[in-house]
Length: 426
Image 1 (cartoon, rainbow, N blue to C red):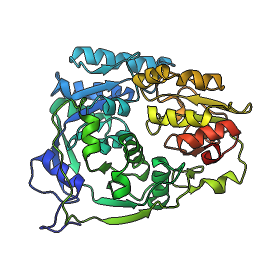
Image 2: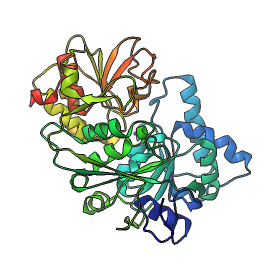
Image 3: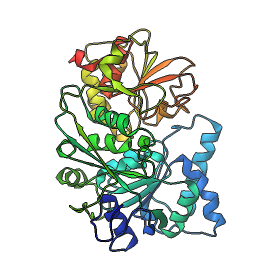
């Protein structure tokens, strides 16, 4: 733990700013001023406690974003009711930033591409993968519906300062090896409980070379480590990404040179192969070539989710798919992360490329990822997926088996009809 006079980590710096304190230490309880609050369908459970506590107005309507993303359009009566609750609430308390059907997208992608979270922010959302926005150099964390009710009313939240796990990465990612492979490799070391209620701070020359989409993938899956938040310090890449979209002024902060970390993990990616997380846990990670040798038949491939459904991911998959067709024994679902990404795919001819090859290209949504909408698999079926979780029951039946991999590896599996190495298609 940090000494009384030691420096602060990136998360500690941000939370000190949010609480108006000069310094904070792990384990300390603070009351933080929230910069951005986000809700999706789960946020419908916030409405009742919001009213029960006597609240009538939201602390700052311009700092609240609602995005419909899990069931789009509503596929069940229950989903339709959730959507109606949120629409009514947004109208009653005058929330202008509502991303409804037709202008929708996965909530985290909406926050990213519209500049709702900027360096130095404390952002919270009713979804565990809110961690993704830590790629902006912010503390971004998932919270429950009653906590969100208090945030909406007061703009403040009690938080315990998390200790920080530092992951320091050096080396260059080889041909066909991408950020998804790196975060899977790290998950194999940290495990799904290794960062429980910790901040995960990514550093090192490899991280500094990553694009913003790659950084989003990295921070997104700190959730699978159990982390409260995952962060990457802001730099010119961050500032350029936000240059035309940032919704409010940036206030970047950086870890002190003498910051104390609970633990540091060093990873060298030189020579690292593509990785895959095998059933039934995101930390059951193996080198992809080892799994390829087992000739595992794939019933369904899914290119989507908040982890890997940005335009760069879909282009990466298209480069593999071009000139090939989806295997006749395999279904292939592609779901872009937002409506704007869908429009880009339309303009670039990517939808045509995928559908002519035998894939189903859907509107933007969480889609098959969470097992509640399009693309549920049958018991004992295998899915190759670019998503973030493969626990039992994640895509429907608990007997279904999900293998997590990069977008390129997902497309390679769709072509081959079994888990395959994307480098073979280069």
